Length: 298
Image (cartoon, rainbow, N blue to C red):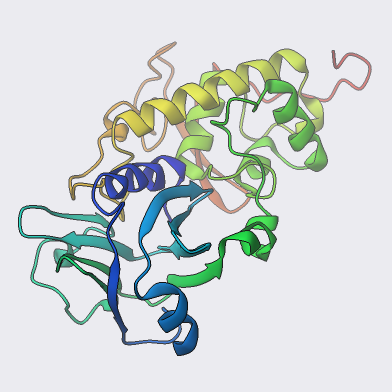
């Protein structure tokens, strides 16, 4: 599943291509991928113009000019491919559907615009979906209601990070960061990278952290996520950037998938373990496992 930088990269690519395009036709092959009533599609999607492309957590929101919106979640193997006479790009799972003639056997939804250009939603495993919602109801969708704050929002302070994390004070900090109800969009790659940046062992319990820890983690999260977006996201198996090119963040990764190599900060050999069922990378020298001191947590 993509993390925040990958979906943000896709959002930025789509924003340059589909805004102000009007939907002329929609076809789909599987109701699981496009769970919308024909009457709603006819009334609220056909003839509507896309006015904005936004991201919330790991989902995309295509706002229409009639107070409705399309919510898109790529899940494990989804793709979005735009095809026009002068421009073609694919974003998502990097199989040949990104570059070959579409639709193909993985195409679940095809949106044709009035100018003849098309947006394809491909999905090999059929876990992803494209849903039509009234824009005013998006915030009440269970999926979004459960999401925590966006870590790159200007009002996301270290105090907010602390307040969100202490809700899971008996959890490891790695598990808490992966909880989308705590913070939106952070997954395995960027949790490991941010904890390395903050010099926090991923197995440390949240209740063992103090204010300096939260300040360092807040700073590291923002720096890592921003760098990853600038580098087009990661090359982690399933995702390429919005122009169909592999992202290159992992070329700059400090610990993720670098077990057996030396830490770029102290030259200690990076180790890999499992925390909360997830492969976890860390430096045993820079990231000490912190014990709980209930009397000195300032």
